[in-house]
Image (tube, rainbow, N blue to C red; front, top):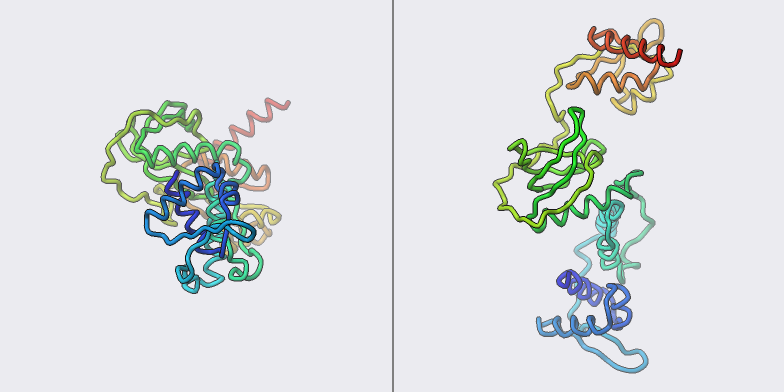
Length: 301
């Protein structure tokens, strides 16, 4: 967008002593003629820009018109850049990369030390995740309906929603919006969405309640799990529930007591431990695991 480019050019000019039209054209991936028009627009807006020809010439802002960077410390800048890098890991465009360049321009003496925080929010799904996020962002900004096919434990369905937020929570990405099918606000997991497309039709923004993304459980947890794990599974229990989540029994096994909201998800999770876990409660989970083990035994007989 032009306004983003104008802000970017102004940021570069504020941070650097001098630059040239070809350098700006390459940085913002536009023609030199476009940069010249942008410089004219900045001048009309009252920014005191001067140009000089010949060797050592270029584009600059008049002396005395500079941004004081002392309001941000080196640590402040590193935190900002870490956040931008994390967003860039799931971006389908060069926007965040260009924004980092704007901030870093002329600041090598200001940002001290090496980058100590590196965040990748895409995991191994970037190839499919970034395009979805880009479409959803465009739909939110332009107030366009979002259409997609959704895969849920209850089955497949086609959904149309009014999108309002993109959320990263519980190690996954979600879109939060008003579902026309359910007539309510819903949270949809991006990895379960397919054929994501922005509609041509617009919607009027509702009075949207802030999505519940607190550290508490997303749904009521009414199932109590009590299970004994083999000692060599301690690392998984610590990773998922913390170092104080279990009680060591006399035989060395680890007793875990946890709340769950969904029996199916709990059983699927327990199956990942193979024969390294024995479920004590609830009895329904024991019976379900026995049935699955029997079916697997018959399959591999």
